[in-house]
Image (tube, rainbow, N blue to C red; front, side, top):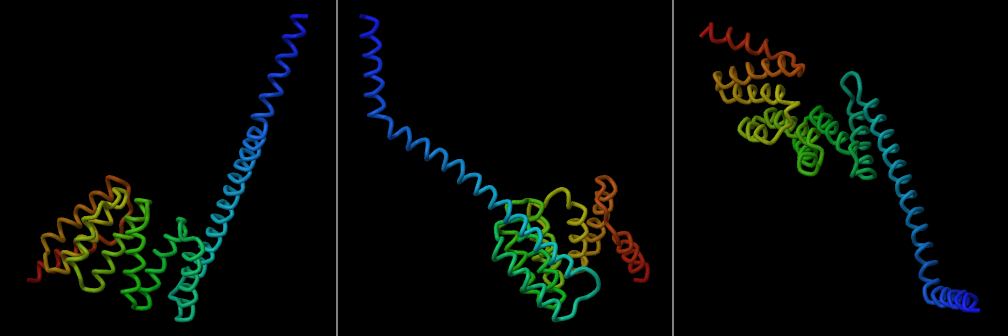
Length: 219
């Protein structure tokens, strides 16, 4: 009888506990299931967005490959850049599209738009290499716009070591634009040294040094 009473008391206790806590348990289970479903749905959505951004960016690359583009082609390509950045603004592909847009703007002679595109990437990107590319290309645009001082200032940003040879090359270009041949020579020699020692391909720098020597010989 004592054992039976004990079993009945345990059963009554279970019934009371379930009455008091059962609803919250069911609710918690439902919320947990919804959370898992929601997370999976979010992951699938993110993957779909990344794939869509990748496809659009590849279309942009294909559209802009090859020879110089006509004005209509440039306009269409830059419109696609806007589509990518509007729809996929938080992705790597949007940042790469802006880098490409800067090149297209330069082809159109629109240096201000090129600067804006590169500044957006440099200021907003959380990817150091992409950010570094933006700084480096922005420095080149500043040189094209005859602002060597601003170019040198941009080259002082924390540009990735993987782009050290290119940075030294552009630094040399900025110095020669200022008439500083010694500074240009030092920078270009550094560029060649880094290129050879760190396996960072670089072309045309030796020709600049050779031309610099030829110019000095004629003075």
